[in-house]
Image 1 (cartoon, rainbow, N blue to C red):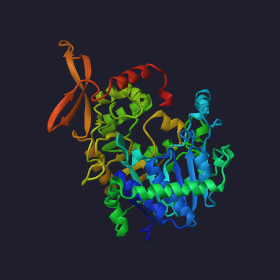
Image 2 (image 1 turned 30 degrees about the vertical axis):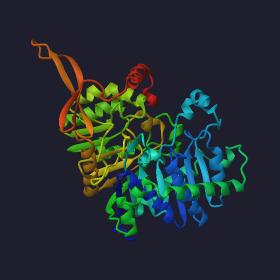
Image 3 (image 1 turned 45 degrees about the vertical axis):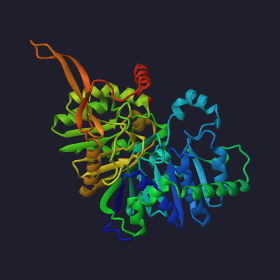
Image 4 (image 1 turned 90 degrees about the vertical axis):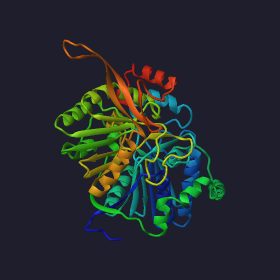
Length: 478
C-alpha cells in the first residue's frame, strides 16, 4: 500500500452496519496480530459474532491482545479467562476492582476516587497496518442490532503511518501498571476444555445468524461490496494522534504529560470562522462555557449537537448540561438536540436506524473551519477531561471535513433534531429587558414546523430524574 508522501489514509464509518463490517473484516484478514482496546465489550449477539471472528483468527495463528476496562465486567471474568486459555490470546483488564462479583459496587462507591477513573479508549487494530478509532464500543446498540435503541456514532478506518502511532498508544496501556492479566484477577477454575466449549457455542451462533435479516443487511452494506471489490477509497491526509497517558487515572490536575486536552487545544484556538461540535454528553463547565462564548463574540459561528432528554442514555449528564443550556443560547451558539426518531443520519441511501428502534447520539467529533476534523472517544464533559482516559485523531483534510459536515448537517436538520432557542414571554416596556424566558424546541414533523415548550418526547420519569440529579453536587463526576 502506498504511503502517499507519508500521509495516512482515512475512511469515515458513519454507518453502523459498515462499522461492524469493518471490524469483522479486520479480524478476518488479520495475519499476524489483533490489538483490541475498549471501554465496553458486551457479550451480546454482535459481541459474540466478533468473538467468533477473533477466536478464528487466533486459531490460524494470529496473536490477539485484548485490553478492556473493568467497569462493566461484573460476572464476566470466567468467560474472559476461558478465552485467555488459547495460546494466541492474551487478555488484560484496566484499573480492575479488587472485588470481582457483587461487592464491586460497594467498592466503587467507597473508593470512587480511584475506581471511578476509567479507560474510555476505543481501538480495533489489525497487523499494525489498519485500525478503527472513534466513538463505538462493542455491542448491539453500536451496530444497529438492537430493537429498542441504537446509537448514532462515528469511527475512522485508518491506514498508513498513523497506525504506528496508534500501536504505540496501545502498547503504552498494555504495558502500564494499570493493566492486569485476567489470570491474576479471576479465581474461577478454568481448563482448556472450556475453550473448546466456547468455540463450539460461538460457531453454532455464527451459523444460525448467517441467514438472519441482520446479516442480510451486512451483506448488502456499502462497505461489504467495497471490501470484496477492493474499492475502498481512502482520503489521504496529514494527521496527528492524541491520547491520554494511562497514568492520567492517577492525576488530579490536567498537565501535558498525561492529558491530551492541553495538547489538542491549539487546533481549536486557531478557529477563524466556524466550529461544529457533536458530543452526546455536553457539560462544558464554567471555563468551557466562557471559552465558547468568547469565541462566538469574535465572530466565529458555533453549532453544537447533543442528546435531547428523550434520547440520552445518561440522565445525570443531561442534568449537568441543562445548567449551561440557556447561557449557550443567549450567546447565539446554535444548539441542537437529537430526536428519538432521527433517520438517514449515517448513509445517504438508507436509514441508519432501522425498524422501531429509537436513536441516541454517541458520536464525538469536531470540525474546525471545514478543514480540520477531530474524531475520537472524548465527550465534552468533566469525566472525559479529568477522569477517563481518551484517544482521538485530528485530520487535516477538506474532503474528510466536508463528509463530516454533511453528517452533522443531516443530523441537525429539523427532520432529525430539535433546534433549541429562548422564547420571550413578556417584556418590560420601559427598559426593554426580558423578564421571563422559556426554552423553545423547534422541529419538523410530517412536513410541518412544530414548537415544543418543554422537553419533547421525554417521559415523566426522566424529567423527574433530571430534576432530582440537578440538585446534587455531582458535576465533577459527569
